[in-house]
Amino acid sequence: MRRVGSLAAAGATSVVLLTGGCGTAARPQQGVSAAAPMPPHPAISGETSAAGSTASSPAAAQPPRATPPACPADYLPPAPDRPVLRLALDVASDHRTVTGTETVTFTPETAIDELDFRLWPNGPEGGRTQGRLEVTSVRPPGTGRPRSVAAGARPGVPGTLLVVPLTQRSPAGKPVTAVLSYTLRLPPARLDRLGATSTLAWWGSAHPMLAWVRGRGWVREGAQASYGETQASEAAALDLTVTAPAADVVLATGLGSPPGAVAAGRRRWHFVAAAARDVVVAVGRFRTLTRLTPVGGGARTVPVTVAALPGAARSLSALMAQLQRALAAHAARLGPFPAEALTAVDLPATGDSGVEYPGLEFIGDVEDAGFTITHETAHQWFYKPGRGRPGA
Image (cartoon, rainbow, N blue to C red; front, side, top):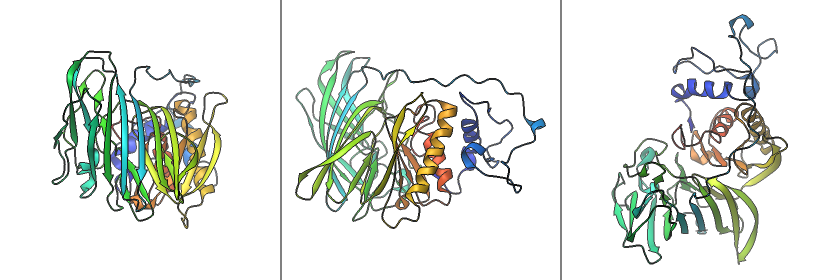
């Protein structure tokens, strides 16, 4: 996440991230303190000096540059025993309620006697006072009566931790499947990862999230009030369906396929991802523009989409140009784009912020959309491991 007025702490890290890496002769800039402003990077910002040439430091001030390693052509395949997550969601016509069914299959590396899920909308993140995620049933046989644990939840809502006991201890390496039905009530629009108006809804980190980390086990720490929840989750194979009003367009994590009509006034959308650590969905009357875009790794291209609501101040063509420029710059430094598709949603209702999720990013009511797109797109390579969480 990038918030206006709070960039200094992230500045030095961003400079190192954007100016080093594989496939480029650029190197991390030294001597940049956390309080110093970020110098523009020509390949991304396109800023020029008064004379019209690209701004740069004198050549004599540049340290020697080592030959960088070549960027990899591709990544290792996802772990074959990663969780498998299936979500079937239905968005109400008022856009404030989502009902869902989650089927998750999980293969622990140690014996377990329970399944732990996090219900993050019930936490106080960023001063949230509304919003509710409630699990209404857990099955199949083999799971006991769920237990809600506050773990930092706001008063009057279920806990942020749901403990589902197993009737028998499950050995290491044995897949365990649970099916959870739940209801998500979205809060009014504000600076948050979830919100709704009468014609628009968005939510991320808003399904019961399996709280397992390999090598550690269950993560049960209490929710925090700071922006950008500190949740942990395993990368999972994702299969997502969303049923919504027919006038709406659904945007989400994963590679989407064309929607189909399922009932009068309703359409169903489908998305898949080989490995995603989180899930985000936006539903509204979006206008979209999609282009197949080279993303590193030889001739590989992915569908890149920009979306905005009718009457938006920013044009789709300008957003697309900014997003494609950021992708090209990052792929040259960091290697091929790591997901099946990328979508940037112009969403002023989220406030003066940007926030990233796997394969999708929100661009809020910010002054410099190009900077925010560049920042949030970099998180597609550097999502949770080693950096923290959405909202960073």
